[in-house]
Length: 190
Length: 236
Image (tube, rainbow over all chains, first blue to last red; front, top):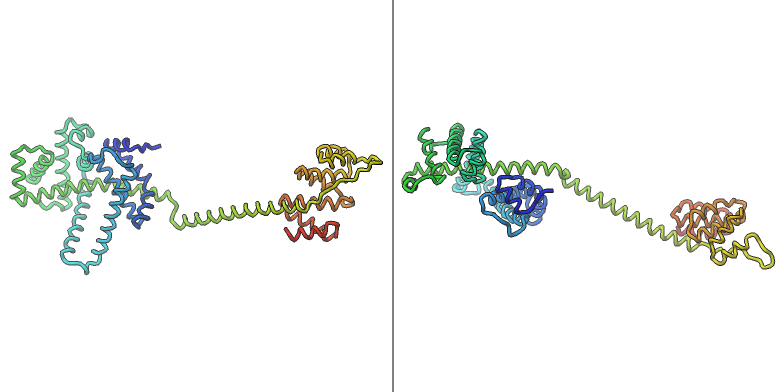
């Protein structure tokens, strides 16, 4: 039987163990879908999307130290984040529906929309570039930017001599990433 | 390329907080007056954000994969779930209905059997002469059914079988009652009595079809029990 005590879950996440994210998702997903469908009239896909984002925010809040203890139950906390995600998704969907009818909107709005589209393209290129990097580089970037480890922690995790080695390695990885982006014709000048 | 790498080093040092105070002031000042430098730094920050987004999406992809696994474990679609619930509900209703029907029918038939069960007064016991059934009949009339049955056991006759059947019914031993009544042959004076009682026991046990056959036979044969059998047949 899985241990769903909040303090155990928070501790695991802080240590870089993501397994509670999957376990909690399995535990509450269906209930959240039913709840958001009845409360906010969402589609099943919208509800899933919202709850996935809620799990990610929960994860980020823990590892960034913004959430160190819970004043409510874990479920209540997750459902509250999920609720805001649902409302945001619904707003976004309404906006996208509006943009779909391009002949109804002004030139400025078209520019803004196209800019957003371009940004999404950039993200795709960045993701492709990251995937071209060696595994250790991907891990360092993950630890630094996603899990927000400091250089001492990265050195420990990666078995480097010290934090200076970790810094150098990270810097090399960033340069390699730029090279990959160059290859993808993404980088204009830097 | 070398210039770009050099700037990456500078951005990295700034990001890691490794610049001294003078370097930091110079960096901030350059951001203010050098538009190209500012643009490159903003691009660097955009890449940093892109890296974070990439790993966030990676975790989200794993949740989406998990979703697909969970969805596969669920019933195929709502229709099949609705169908399952509907058929289960109907089956449950039918079962409850069947049980209720059986319970009510059973109670009704049992009551009917009791209602039409003829009271058997027993054979007359004469004071002047001693008959072979006297002791059994005296016990029977005193409701000492155990003794009566025991005394009748020693006598092999239709009379004995008939009364033993009656006693078995009174003591709720329907199986024994049926066994006794069935042994009584057609040519016996107790045959119709025994058959009628056998019909009532079968009715009481819920074997309505067998009971009906017996009552119909009474009607067809115009026995002493034909009128009452007809009456019962109308009620079952």
